[in-house]
Length: 334
Image (cartoon, rainbow, N blue to C red; front, side, top):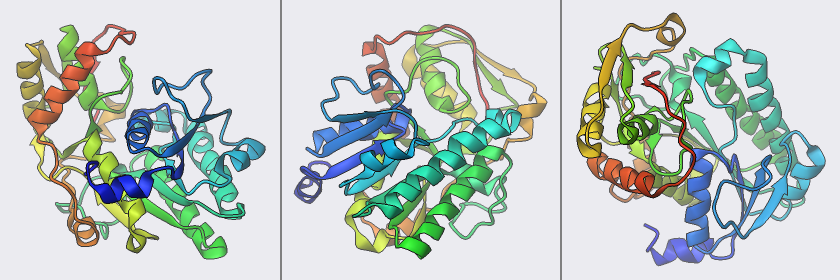
C-alpha cells in the first residue's frame, strides 16, 4: 500500500507525532512514516530514540509533563499513540504502576490534545485483551469487555477517556484493538509481551523455548507492517473517526504450530512443554481469532503477509541486527 500514490501524497510533509516511540510498534511506525516523507516528531524518555538515524524533532521527557506534551502536540495533524506499560502479568503484580503508566499518562496526553489550538487526530492502540476469554469466535467489536488484567482494564479506561474528550471538546480519535503483532524491531530479551518475536529470537540463539500448557490454543498473528498499514489508512478516511476496530490476522494458527514453523525456518531449537504457573494461567484466554468484518466494511485493506513470509522477513532482520542479545530461556506467556 505504501507504493500507493494517494498514501504518499497524504503523508508527505504531514506533521505527525509518535507516542510510545521507543516500543516495537512505535519504532516500526516511525520508519514507515519517514519512508512516506512525513514530518515526524516523537516523544521519548531516552537520551536518544531507538529509531536509528532519526532526523525529526525529539521531545525528551514524560507524558505527565503538561508543558512538554502541550509543546509536542502543538500544530500536529496526527498523534499515533502506542504508549503504555506493557505486560498483563506485570500489571496485576503492580497495578498502581500500571495505573500511573497507562491512565495518568494518557489523561495528560489527551487533555493536551483536546485543548490545543488545533487538535490533532489521535489514533490509539488498544488490545484484544479487553475481551478476556472469548465467549465466541471470531471476536467482533460487540463482544462483551471481560478484562482479566489491570492492563486490559486500563486500556478500556483510556478508550473511554477519548470518548469523553470527544464529547466535551470534539477531540477526533480512532481506536484499534490489536491482536498479536510480530516482526522486526522488538528489543532482544525476555519481556511479558511480544511472545512470537521472543520465540524467533530464541530460535536464532538456540535457546530452549518453554511453552506453558500444550500449545494448542489458536492465535491470529499479524505482521507488524500489515498492522501499521491499517493505522495509517484509518487516518486517511473521515468515516473512521470515532470508531473502534478490531485488528488481527486473517488466519489463526496454534502456538505449537507457530513454534514448529519458526524452529524449522530458523534451524531448530529445543522446545519444552511445562505446567502453567498460577499468575499466567489466570490470564490465559484460550483460542482467539479476530473478526475483521467491521474494518473491511470501512477500508479496502491490502493482502496480509503470510505467517511463513512474515517469520522469514523477521528472521532476516534479526540476523542482521547487532543489538545486545541477553541469553536465557524463552517462555510462552499467553
